[in-house]
Length: 121
Image (cartoon, rainbow, N blue to C red; front, side):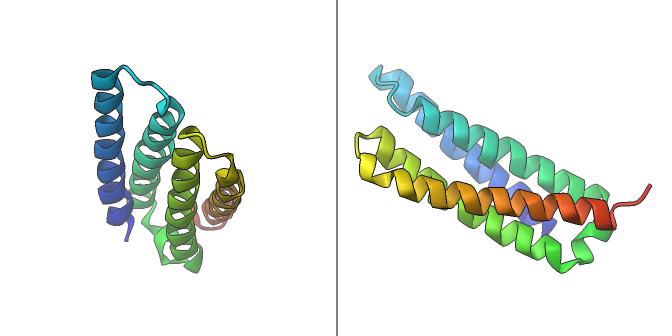
């Protein structure tokens, strides 16, 4: 399943690039925060997670790995959904961002625990 972190990272990178191109073509940079978060949390972080899990495969046998994967991607998608609409001028989506961010943070905490419990030199 660590391969899915890398596959989704590539997809998130493509989405981030498309948003960047769209902003450049329209000279409308309202979504710069969305663009940055998709590239950092979606592309970079997911790719790093995938590479870490590939290198330290002992951490993939834990249930923590599965919880991390599913919660991270759920939190990421919820957060990006809310951020997209917030940046479109819809402040009612702030709670959606908060929920997504909390799920995302929880998944990173799970990653931290998994690394401390299952990664050995």
